[in-house]
Image 1: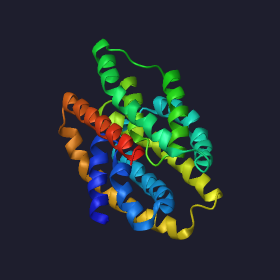
Image 2: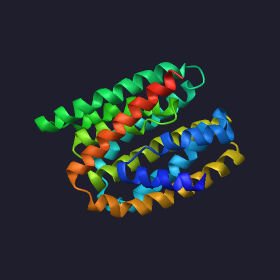
Image 3: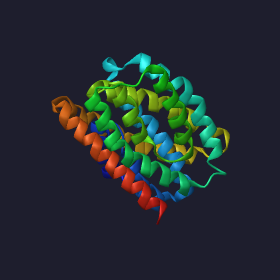
Image 4: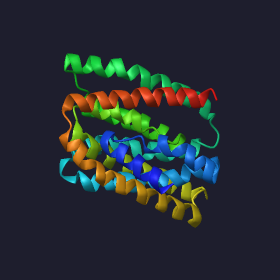
Length: 235
């Protein structure tokens, strides 16, 4: 479990997300599906906090504020909706969205078009709500922040700070619903510690990557995330 956590932390430290997707099968097998979501919520808080610390000097605070002001309350609403909404339809929708965003992001880059702060704020509300419902929507924030113009350290730091705010909101809501007892928190802290180690190990890799290589890595993430979401929906 710890070795997988370090590996997932290293990968998410390079591309900004993906640790939840890697750890989900292991957490479900070890603790059961009902505990996997709150455990990952705690671990995600620690993983994003480590990315904030590692890249703190490159955070775009305007982008963070625009994204989080709508994303925080939306994540709380989404967490409450989780108990009554069929997740399969959400997985299908997200999977198709991830795949569609690969050519869409390429088109935006080719046209040199960027989304504005108010559009980033709208994206924060939508992604925040979905973050409350499903285990991982990290890949959704990839096209949002990259289309705003953030890359490498600025992207990793701002996305991590915004995701941290959303996951704290989600975890607090889980706590209010009684889905986050002390045992689950302890398990989340253990998993989160391994993710933090991987995150700091990945910083040098990102610093040496070119912008074109970083873009290709993001495209591969969207492709893998889309396929995995569709696979989960139909199995």
